[in-house]
Image (cartoon, rainbow, N blue to C red; front, top):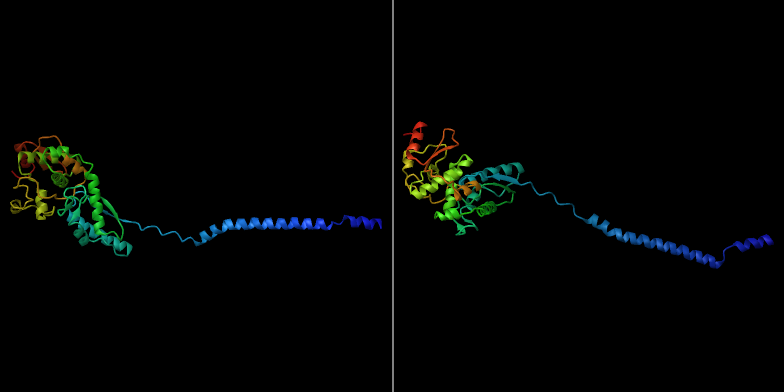
Length: 299
């Protein structure tokens, strides 16, 4: 009886059992709460990650078109047509640029840095540089990019010296275009500009054949004939005083700077040397003639 009583006394009481059950239940509830909170915190991220759209494809690699310094508007239109066909062949899809579209878009331009702003003679304002384009780029957008590049470069010039010589901004642009077409050696740009300034001051014909080539559409590969030299064209600076009516090309920044700041020299004549790159410069008509005779340019 004593042992049986001892065993019965070691059993938990009903109070203890209820307490233990309460503690266990509380633990389960706490664990469930912790799990619920954790799931609630993570679930939006999981949902958002699952619902996020795939990243967009990379933009198409742009094409590039290069306009060399001294290109005319017509040459640029041809270049646009060639590059557009190459782009279409490479990508297998049409592009919006075209020769005819560029020609139309550049016949009339708004040039914010010039007065008047609207230009119908647009040669000179299409800045020569490298431009990117994609399939949807329009000729008008490309022309606008060129005009913006022109204005950025134009606004870096100091025009005070040229204005002191009674030259207008358009005169400077026209001179720059002639410098661009005549200068093959970069160092000679300010010298050629000086000859133009000096001849204008002395009221001498400029005698620059590049202007006649532009006015009569004579390609560089062809010789100028005697009848062409006598042409009444406004671009014939051999028999007309002053500047041609418009620029004859689209000059780069170096030629613009030379036109605004010519060299301080008294040269009135220049002729291409036999190397076809450099020029012989002089202020003497007789020295000029002697050089021409000595190098087979005629006497």
